[in-house]
Length: 101
View (cartoon, rainbow, N blue to C red):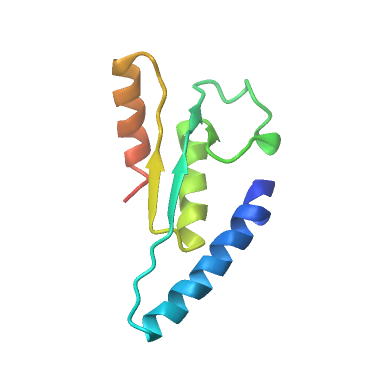
C-alpha cells in the first residue's frame, strides 16, 4: 500500500467521512472531491513500484489508487491530465475511466 494513503490523505478522508455522516442527520449534503494530476508511465520497470506516489505509475496502478480512494469515502475524482499529445491523452482518459465505474 502506498504510504501517502495511510498518511495525510487517509486522515483527511476519514475526518470528512465523519463530517459527512454527521451532516446526514442534519439534512446537509457534503461531498468529498479530489483533484489529482496522474503521472502515467507505460513501463512499470521505470519506477520502483513500492516507492511510487499515489496516482503515478501504470494505468493499473492508478486504478488501484482509485479503488483505495473510493474505500476512503471520496465521492468524485477530477483528473488533470497534462499529456501534450491529444491522442495519447484521450487514450489515457479512456483507460483510466474503466476503473472509475
